[in-house]
Image (tube, rainbow, N blue to C red; front, side):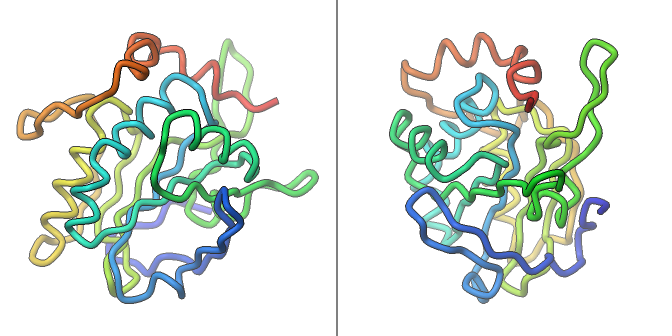
Length: 203
């Protein structure tokens, strides 16, 4: 499936988080939310991204916006990741069936062919969607760079009431964005963020 274009309805979905709570498009109806897709729990780039959303969580809550992460990891893996870095938001378990693509990733077009050292494989393309209260894609961030990304998403959230739908190729920093706060525990991951693609390959 291709990526969902801004202005189009988000696909219906239903998936459990790290505590077993099921989240769906229907349950989120009437409220804006962020759905960010990442390759793998507790890898360098994915940790930087998750901790940035954690550090901006109060601002997302103030804006009335829910943040949900999605990866093909299982609920137990998500629970360990959330505990280790004190992530306060749901991580949806999109585990693939035998020989099948993860359903949620496939529906949103983020399950894509990737390449490493000349070898091709299927994996998650780091992508973030902002879904409006009407259930439509208000903004999409492609080729996300983890560092500073949460601030880019916050800017899109702030523009929701009046801004037109946008598609964005994420940059590692935005001149209009303040640097994201990080705890000392995330600093090693920041230095190693360039290695996240290698760590993200699913075997």
